Length: 137
Image (cartoon, rainbow, N blue to C red):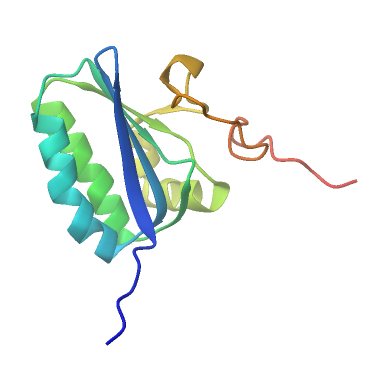
């Protein structure tokens, strides 16, 4: 019997009272099932001034992934915590725009340098503001 490796994940860190959640990979039904309990524990373990969800490393998102973001939003609202999304790849962001969820979140085009993971090396395509992709020619 073959075991599949997850195609998604979550890194988190606390930076001076801000919980930074970096989702990565394919945020689908499997990711939702695995990550929701983990996110719930993280959100409830201590009071945070704000929660920032970094979508830059997300390569795919479906309805279950959108539901995961709504759940994080509900928890943050219930805890009176500010929530921010860091805009991700155009394909991922288009899903949020088409569903109208982009209007439900405060959105940053880039993650402030103070919130970046230690040792973060900027990726030429992912750390530039949305819509500023390199163009050939």
